Image (cartoon, rainbow, N blue to C red; front, top):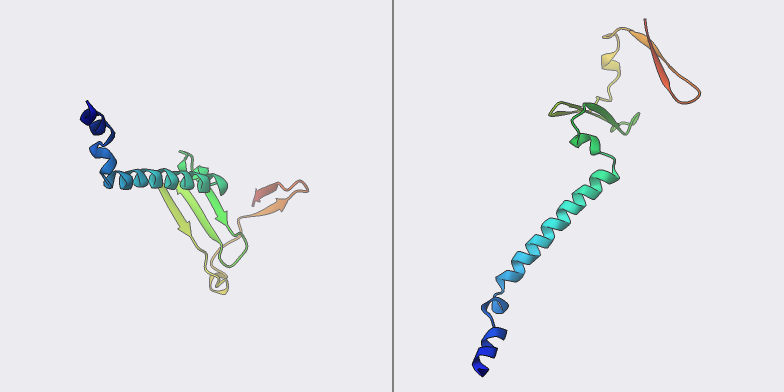
Length: 110
């Protein structure tokens, strides 16, 4: 009877060092997923996971400005070049934009 009690207390699982590694891997995966969810919600980038098309401008008006668009399943990144003189004279005026006192912008095509 005494030997049976010892065998119940000393199981093979208690002495297996690899069981600790598998538990650490599970904890690391849960932490990584939680961190990704927190970053996406913190930077308000939940639109990337929706089905709607959208356009987002990072750092507007600065040298490192980026335009990110999502069309269906495709995500495009565009970084405008800082060389504005090379683009002069290549386009035409298509309308005028007005900013109202409340912050709304109205576009009037010509």
